[in-house]
Length: 125
Image 1 (cartoon, one colour):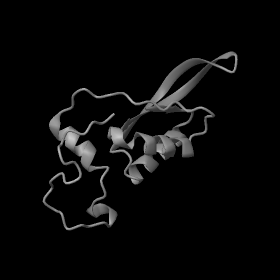
Image 2: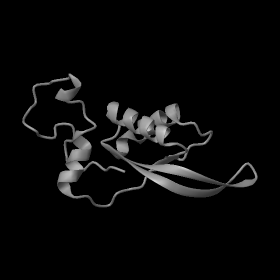
Image 3: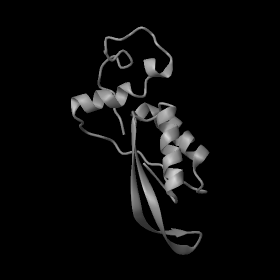
């Protein structure tokens, strides 16, 4: 999860995360009102909140990508554990961050199994 100051930046970060297969889905929540203390002052801004759906194992790479495009000096980058998820949704999250035929990386595996996750129990945030 992260927050940004403009819709343009929200879309740019979201599209990069999806294009790099670092996230399966990013929800952009507009008109978030943030009140915080920064450098000795109380500040208030309107922001966009990004909910990034990705496996826990990709957190460091997602964090680095967000920092690469983020305009804030200290961007909010948080992960929240997911205790349960509907099974089909969970598999979708995991499959969409793996290289696939639509990336021009056709490995001939068209049977739809989840070869990238040997036990099917991978966590996502």
